[in-house]
Image (tube, rainbow, N blue to C red; front, side, top):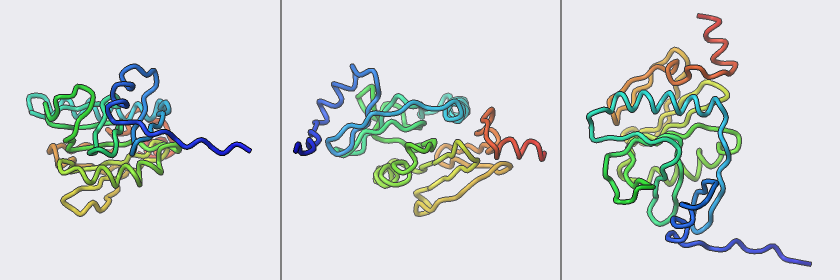
Length: 193
């Protein structure tokens, strides 16, 4: 009987080098790499809505917005690809990751929910620069914001509410975040308005 093969350890240097030539993005966690799955249209709509609003608001400031293809480095433990990042310009000399995000947004899906709500949340909150960690549902309407200044206690926002991203002094309506998203909560809200 064959025993299962133990996963091999990959160094950070090898991961970063290999990631440049891979067709599929991979995240890195404590020496192991994990392939990332594709995203739905609703997932992309939420990302696009946030990136657009953040970019317009942050024009002529030292902050930049990135979507999905830039990694966040968490010490020597992990490299993740958040859905949306706001970081200060030139926070690292590396062109492919940031170490000092002020806002991280993850759009939840069935395949990523557990990791986003546990492992990533715990590790992201160790980053001294991070002020807000945001989890957004794509299949229902729920925007969860965890703020450093409030002990990372979650606050939830729904259709008709406004969300303040205090780290960048921007307030958006939940309706704007979910613009063009198709799910039962969004449809019910607009039928009732």
